[in-house]
Every structure is written in structure tokens, then in C-alpha cells.
Image 1 (cartoon, rainbow, N blue to C red):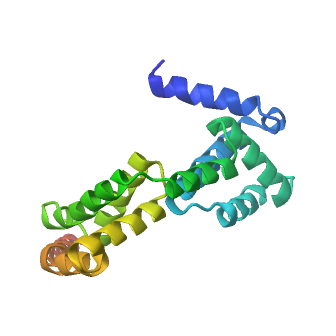
Image 2: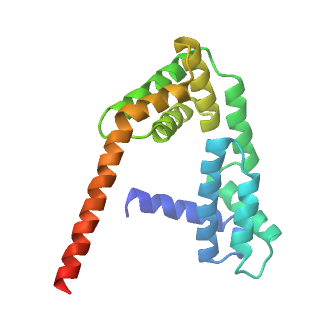
Length: 204
């Protein structure tokens, strides 16, 4: 049995033994674990989960014999079993860390902000939004804060050091380095599609 399989079995067992899990089918547990993973990712991204929880609870209940309110309870229970803490505890933990960051966190935030330009410039080039997100995920993971908090910290430290907005800086680089490459890729793809259509017509 592989490590991934062992981990999946452990997660399933913990979910089965939760209060709601004891009454759920295997498929329902797997669905809830999937939703729990999405909610965990959303908390780490934005520091919020309530709207997503409501949306997923309604979707989960749609083809079941229970209502959205019951579905929400089930999702919360499975989340707790899978993560060892409630949805709100995850959120509060990240928020508390953001409020008590050491001064060294600002230096690290600036370094991450400055890597965004490198990600845009160097092949394979990427647009600003992807480079920005990648740097935010890296910083948030290291500091154990939300990605929204990481982005705010990067923007603040970059502007303080360089006297310009991080967004404006990134978009300028995108225009110079990423846009021409992307436009060339689109043109090549269109040419390939036209060639494929021409071949198809000639064969028919």
C-alpha cells in the first residue's frame, strides 16, 4: 500500500467515525471530504468560508434526502474529522497569525514580491495574475497566513521600497515579456487549426 493510499484510508476512517459520518454512505463521505478540501483551500486563500459552505451544502443536498441545513452540518463534521479543527478554528488561527507577524515577515514579503517580476520575465513566461498568485501562495504557506493577507503584505512592502504599485509594475512587465509570447502562441495555434481543417477538407 502506497503512502497516498495509507493517507486516504486514514482520512476515510476518521470521517467514518465522526458524528455525521456514522450515518453516511461511502460516496457521501468521499463527497464531503472533497468539499472539505475546497473549503480549506478557500479559507487559506481568502480567510472566509461561509458563502462557499452555503453554496456547497445546497449542491450536496440537491440529489439527497436531506436538506441544505443538514448537509452543512455533515460537511462541518467531516471537515473537523479531516483537519482536527473546525472551519472557524482554521480561519481564526490564520487571522491570529496575521495579526502577530514578526518584523522579519516584511522582509520575506518584499523578497516574494520582487520574485514576481522574475516569474513574468523568465521563460516559460507567465501573466502577472499567475506570478502574483504563485508568490502569494509561497508566502502564505511560509508565514501560515491567508493568501489575501500575503498579497496585502507584498503590495505594502513593495510600494514602500520601490515607490510604485506592485500591480502597475507587474502589468508593465507583462506587456513587455508575456504578451508577445502569448500572442505568438495564439497565432501558432490558429495556424495549426487552419492547417488541420484544410487537411480534413482535402481528405473528405
